[in-house]
Length: 215
Image (tube, rainbow, N blue to C red; front, side, top):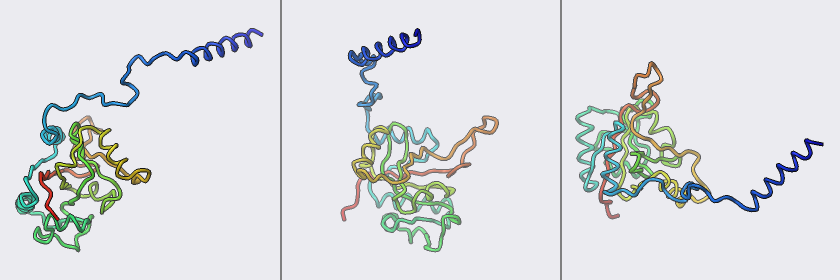
């Protein structure tokens, strides 16, 4: 009998609580707005700062011609002989053949892989990529060195802005894989010593282009 009365008291309190909901103590905690203040400066500067903090290597290019020149110099300096780029449109943009790229190069044999991206997150310095890009989910992960070619209009401030952009792009058909790659692969699992390049590329380069070519 005592159990029944206790149960009834609990249910009564639950009903009362539901009929008179208590306001949230933190009005901004329901996820409708960003908890981070808006950036004071340009997104490209913020991204470059955060990306380099994560051991990424950043290059700003006024246009595609400058990107082609800088990329060509980098390939020559590093003596990369096997470039891999599965994206036909990106091959034309970077002048793949002039860089010494070959259709015979495979992901498993390449020195470096070149990809595009879906967005750049300035606050975290992350590169957003998806499974529906040419090369799928493997290109930016398995290559020892990853080069990403991006444009300034792909910059967003925060992760939530990138997710909103992806939702607007894909609607209800999101790709099976979305990754936020923040610099080279890093781990400190072994004796708390930081090791780079264990679970992914040991170097990540990003070429950020200000102007898109008119086609």
